Structure formats: C-alpha cells, structure tokens
Image 1 (cartoon, rainbow, N blue to C red):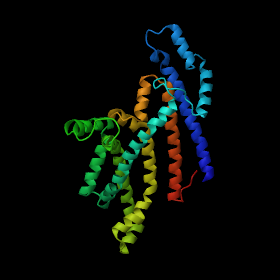
Image 2 (image 1 turned 90 degrees about the vertical axis):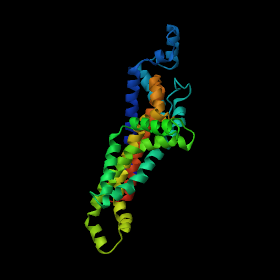
Image 3 (image 1 turned 30 degrees about the vertical axis):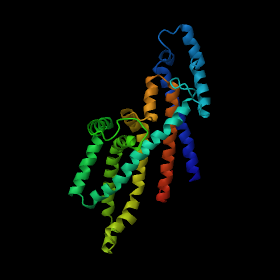
Image 4 (image 1 turned 120 degrees about the vertical axis):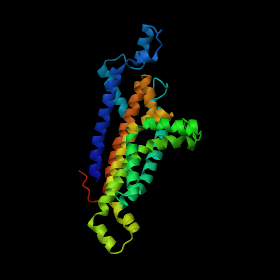
Length: 306
C-alpha cells in the first residue's frame, strides 16, 4: 500500500507539473497581459516598465525556469487583477467551492441510493419507469439552462430564494441543487443497474430462500457490494464537478468560488491567477484519485493496486 501511494504521488507530481506547464505556455500565447492591464493611453516606457516589473521582459525560457522554481514554493506571484498574491486568492475562494461541491454531491449521494434501490426492486414497474425518466431528463438538461430556470421560477417569480451571491444558507440552495442534478441522475442509474445485478445473484436468492428479510439483504449484502463501483463513479463525478461543473454553476449564480474566479481571471488576462487556480485544481484531482484507490482497497481487499 505504501509503495503504491508513493508511486502515485510521484506520478501525480508529474501530471500536475505537466498541466501547469501547458497552462504556462498557453497563457503566454493567448494574449499580452501588459496591454490588458494598462490603459490604451500608456506610453511605451510605461509598458516596458510594467513588463519588467512582472518579469515578462525576459526570454521565454528564463520565464519558465523562474516559473518552475516558484511552483515548487507555491509562489505564483501577485495577481494582476487582485493586486495580491495569487495563492492567497485561491485559498480565499477554495472554501466556497468546497462548500458548494459538498452540498451538491452530498445531496446527490443521499438521494440516489434510496431512489436507485427502490427502482431496482421492481424493474419495469411504475417507480422504475418514473426514476429512469427523471434521471434521463436530468442528464439531458444543461446546467446553465437549469440554473437560469431555477432563478426564473424560485427567485424572480416566487421570490423564495436569492438569485446570486453568498452569505446565508438560502444562497446555497439553488446552486447546490443545480450542481446536484447531473450527478444525481448518474448515481441513480448506476445504483439501479448494480442493484438489479446483485438481486439476481445466487447468494441473494439463497438468503431470501432462508427467510432473510429484504431490508436486511439490502443493508448487509447488496449495498455493501455496490460500494466499490459507486465509490469509483463518485470519485469521477467529484473530479468532473471540481474541474468543470462548478465553473458553470458559479458563473450563473455569482458564487464566489474558484470557477467564477477563473473565468474572471481569464477575462482580465490575469495569467498568474489562472496558473495558480489550474495548479490547485490539478493537485486536488490527483489527491482525489489516490484517495479513491485507497478507499476502494479498504472496502474490498481483493482489489489489486497495480
């Protein structure tokens, strides 16, 4: 186990550094931050002085070497937009994103297990058809459209919840539910399919023939056996949410997390802040992958960690 974790950490370091290096190259090619940050009336001398101040007057290979050394120290320089250290901005916005993801995915996990189990008890029945239809609808609806519809109905028309921002539990409801819809649909379909397979296995038929109650069979046997695939898809959904879904949801609802900050940094040409955000997300994704593998091994010792 220790050798596996160390090996994955080394591989993860290479992945994170590779991703950050790609972002370094792209941010240099995408535009000129000097022109974006200074007014159009700035003189050539002012532009040159500003470029020297942020280190963009050096050759690209010198900038990369300095960048690599700074990454090792978690120092991405000062945000051109915020005028303070980029990692300070990341640490400030990260808890907001973590709260949103925890609320959204937590809701999806809590609801998907009973919904999927109920649908699997009678395949083809009313509950199964209704759950499957709603799940397919949830997978088909874009989150930006769902978020806008939620604002129109619950904020503008009914005036039950705020449209955007952060500060109270009410501000979290619409973003969390919007974020939860796609994972909820996918979790429910996965639990349904896995439960149907488990209910048709020989050991379940034997347990029922011996007189064990359905509730005990579900709790003790079938739910435990679907935890490994459920954990795998949960890890994938967490990674997808962290790297993509939150950008859409945070932008729609004005939620001040990493996703919205990344969009704003790109719009303002703040390459230092973009690099810090991408590095942080890549690092978290690598750690999540390692954690999912270790938890899978703890749940099912038969799994080989190769």
